[in-house]
Image (cartoon, rainbow, N blue to C red; front, side):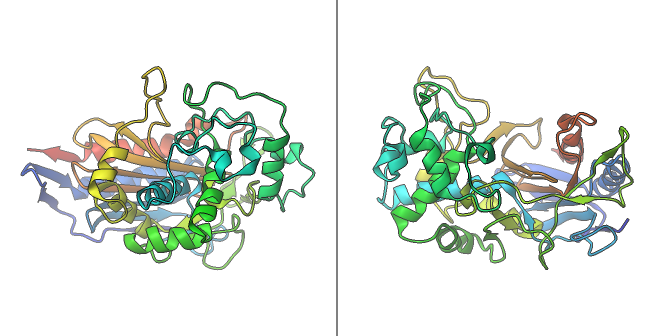
Length: 389
């Protein structure tokens, strides 16, 4: 095992002043030693090999890892390791759609069929429905390989649109009446961004989002990279005779089965150090003017007036943790062998980045709920190290 553990600030209790004048106290020594212990414990349990990065504003409070970028015993993870962020990509996709509307290039009320011919049999589905996962399209991500004749490594947008265009199944519900998480919906939004802007998805995201946010190394990829220099592999620890193999034996996860030219649902890479900057999208006018940003932070309601538990915001979530963290903006991403998350608490200006690139992924031996335990434990412990007076 290679472990990295360092604090870039002094190991003393430190106070900082919030905008409203309330003092929040961080016990650095407790935070440091406690999170080190949590990382080590879950590593020994076989549930964590990754990286945790915590900042207050631009000041690093904790940055520590336990794992490797390439192979066990190889290059250790750091705050500059590039790793796939999975569905956190959707936060950038959602922001791009809102920016295009603000620029007058589309309206959320536009029918998707205005831009994507494959949606002509579903004329009531709008861009807004895709943005908030309420389109009720009867085609989903899982099973695409079985539903097409495409080579599994060469699935393209045309194959997806052929399925949508040829399906005989009706909509699952009236659009806007029910929220069902849809990767395909966000893949289509990425294609729509290209058609409306006249730019590639990668170029539009880089020019209009990443550069204003100061995320110069973050990028759109064309697949999940395996054994590519500078990029972090994802690993799956496989069971043997009902028990897990030693953590020195890991299987590199195969390429995730997504259309290679529809990256907007999950094909981006970032680093712990840069992913922190996503907080500026939620709290500043770096991307959207304040008035529009505030408007988009109001939850989308279904036709009956209810608010979905997970799909109420454009590509991210807002939820409530116990005080003092309180209300947080968050997004999580998952791929075979990977869990990652970003949480930002505007009241404390704390941002939490979590990456776990070695994971036991959805199998009968170890429930996926157990795989979430390291992330939950670290967030709860961070909250416990904060005091207010």
